[in-house]
Length: 99
Image 1: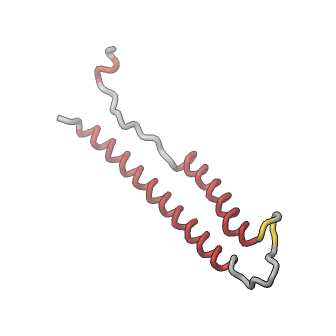
Image 2: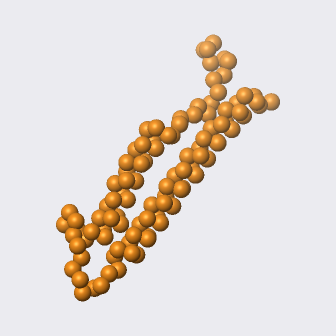
Image 3: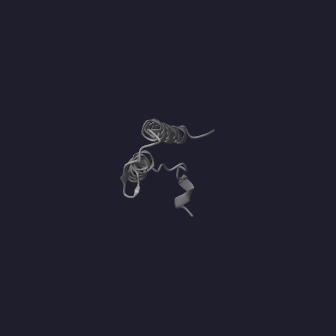
């Protein structure tokens, strides 16, 4: 028969991984909406105008691609170092100490 304590620890691990999955999917959705909305609002202006530049690129590119990219990089580093938890999936067997 399987050990009920092992099932509890796996349940906690699966709940943690589900929280991490939902957080990352939510993050992806936020950035997808940001990129889509800002790109559609900032990129399609009067074709006769010269676009304003920032760092040598059109400003809409910086705000639509560059800025979310940098923020996503910072977020994923924070997420990986602080929020992700490593869980042990293998419960140590009592015979492991005898070997």
